[in-house]
Length: 117
Image 1: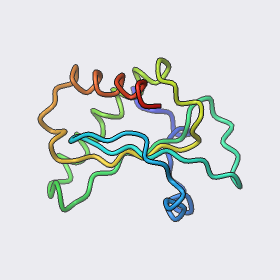
Image 2: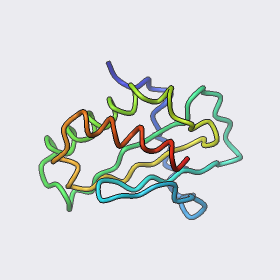
Image 3: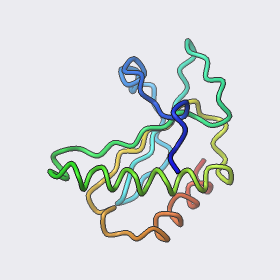
């Protein structure tokens, strides 16, 4: 099962406002930025979210998409237990080291976000 479309961030105007983003959490696997952009109303129960991994880090699109699918599924499963209501938008910058994690470890890291939100 995938993340609902209304919870995926696809608006390029939001990416231009990254200078107002607040660093929420980082480790060797990802950097999480969260921010509120006041001129657009986000009426969703959960914030809109995007997972980004640079082509420089992983050349293969297949591997990049695999990483995104795995982390997206870990987020989708655990999002109800996360305290993320304060944010309208979340941006995950993923690193290549995240490939080394299995699904249980991804779940653990997603749940660890509650300590920092």
